Structures are given as C-alpha cells and as structure tokens.
Length: 309
Image 1 (cartoon, one colour):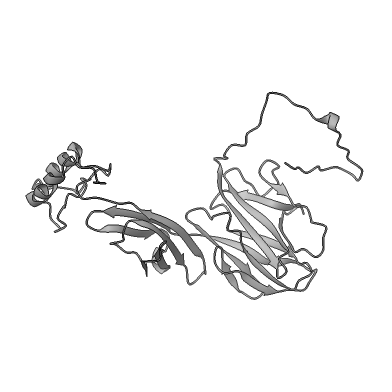
Image 2 (tube, rainbow, N blue to C red):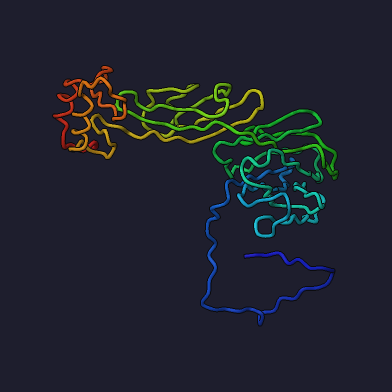
C-alpha cells in the first residue's frame, strides 16, 4: 500500500512506528456503479521508458477537479522519462481525469512531455477496455494522423525533452455493438447494430482459428469468436469477444433438456393459426422452414433426453 502526501509548503514529513493504529474496523473497496468506463493512454519511447494517463467516464464527473474521482498528476522527476497527462482550465494537472459521463464529452486534449528519446509511440493501455458502444482515436492535430484506440500504435518523431500541449488529443465516438444468437437450424448468428453500422468493416474469427470471415454471418459453430470492426472514415476500431452457445434440437427454452415445456411450445407452434405473430420460439425441428407435424415426429423420440446425451 502506498499514498501521496500533499502539503501547502516545503518542509519535512516524518513517519514513526508509534503513529500506527489498529482496530476492528476495515475498509474494503467496492465497485463504483456510477463508473461507466476507464481508458488508459500510454506514451513510450524506444528504450521502454513510458508514462501513462487515464480518462474516466463517470456519471458524476465534471470538467472541474473532484478529489474523490480525479487524481492529481505528479512528475517522475526523471527527465529521461516521457510523461503524459491532462490539464484543467485552472492549470491543475491530472493523472486521472473524470470529465463526465458517456456522451457528455468527445475530446480530451493530452499534454506530452518527451524524455530522452525522440521517437515515441502512443497507444491505449490494453488492461482497460473501452465501454460498449464507444470507440476512440488518438489524433495528431498537426499532421492529421490518427490511430484507433485498441489498434496500431501511433509512432511520431518529437524533440527530446520538449513539451507538446496543443498537438495530441483523444476523440471519442459512438460505435455499434455486437451480439450473437444461436438456433438449431441457423447455428450461431452474428449481429452488428448501432449508429451508422453499415459503414463499418467487420471481420471475425474463431478463437481456435478454424473459421474466419467478414460481415454479419449465420451458421457459425458453437464456440468463442473474436470480432473487430473498423470505421474507414474515422479510423475508430471496436473489438469484442463473442460466445455462441450450443443449441440442441427440441430444446426450445434452452434449459439443456427436451422436457414438457418444450413439448407444449412445439404443440402451440405447429398450430395453423392465420394470425400467428411469431411470438413463440421457432419449432422447426427438421429445418424445412415450416412448423408441421413432421417436427413433432422428429421431436418425440428425443422427449425427456438431456441435450448432452
């Protein structure tokens, strides 16, 4: 455990063993349900020296300093290290900046102080994921070069031991979301929806590498898939891991067995009702596109059987 001590003026601070206290009370950090996302941005030079700053999306965040959700930036004191941080209008430098909730801000200016190296890379810290429905880019406003958060690093040549205050920024955009459904006949189906979803280039691959492709797709085997989408205009990137569940024939309520509930669903589904509105689960056991007594005949031999059998 470590902590910062902030003092009003120069002086010495002493810590003695007799200052230690103990008791039955304890503090356990709990999840902050008002936090919507946490993004880390790293600047690193070729010798591995680096600095990092954080942007926190929080429902109670404001552009002003808030001691409970922001954190002040402290320089390392080593001019060989590159530094990256944000700065408020009053000049307060922040390591963690919580400017607002999702959708309340779009641009976060970055201040970069280079160290001993001239070539630096800027990237998102992969330990933190962008919240669903959000993508972002790192933008070099001087050259117009952008790099999608979660994608390739931005590599730039800068002057050593120099400060860049108005050149780099992170820009956030709304992004589509992924989801998957599975059915006995269609297999796994990958869905991609949201704002301007049609302009995004979507690529997917199974974790085991046996399947890959592009665009929304059906007929996927059960398993885990890695999906990415790139907006060719903004260069934003969205990444997601999707799991497609195993679905067996006749298990209409997806509880792992063919039971009386499934039989009742099937009997209702095969009724020739003219005004059927599709509110029942699909009961097309033979995958011929129709719900008939043939589906019932295919289902009955499996009635009472667990899907794993």
